[in-house]
Image (tube, rainbow, N blue to C red):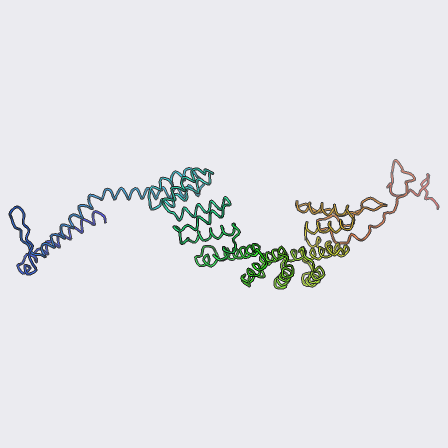
Length: 455
């Protein structure tokens, strides 16, 4: 309470005491009892209500005196808190502006106020890390541990994740003194579990993350997809993979990343048929180019069945580069070179990119045409560097390398199986006039006097 308010309260109390004393001076109050105080051989008598009133007035007087004596100290404390908050605000502004050393100095001074010391130390740690002063950051962290154990654990766990030490981060966040974890602590623990290859445990924390609104809904959905796929990839055996797949929500079973993870792990565990079946069901449900690419390059048998499914999808997606590439790879695996070459030409024309060039090069290499294979591999490297591909050319015993396709970025619109047109030999030039030379590739059919020759 302010001094002026205290003085007003005291005056009101004195006034009430004076008024009350008029009523308390009557003899009728003696019926409530008397208080006798003996001091120095003298007896002082008073009624109980009068004594109670004097005690109340005395307490009010003492409280006012204490307030007056403590007011300078309270004013000094308010001034210190005001200065500390001003330094905190300036330190935060300096941190956001990139003035790291100035921010540290202001924040360390602001941390003398116990109410804001934790926030000041957290920002001081970030400022020290921004200028790569690990010694100062460690010193501020030690000071923060004595101020706020939860903030210290969150900041230290974040640093451990940056240093790729997820197990240490998990152990730190599991400390009993900081339980229950705040929303950011839950997110950090989930990320640490995922990096420690314990995605199944991390997936179990998604409910708490949603409940506490630790992340936006879109970010939680993306995290759920990532953890579901990672959980499938971490399955130890076929039974664990099947159980994890059954526990996966139905909405995610057609997601490309989740289906790809299941198929890859199933093939790694020699469980080929379920891998292909789930890929086919996912493609029938929702078309995805990455799943088609994976379906075409799975290291499993059943080439005829896969080719039939790809042909069926080709009627629905005739311009799909991934589908044409998959057909080319399947045909190449069956050593149907002409068919594979045709599909791969169409895939390159549709924009399949370096992967189609590599597959075409493998087809040519398998057929023994090493020159064309080398050109295909070179085009794959060119497109990876962002350059245009060059037209392929086939060596002919009668003529040098002849271009068989136009030279442009996507050159494959005609099959390399067609032979180039023969080039007619050119007859030698009979005569070239030095004054008016004729085209050396055109035969001169005139005599010395300029008349046409008669055959």
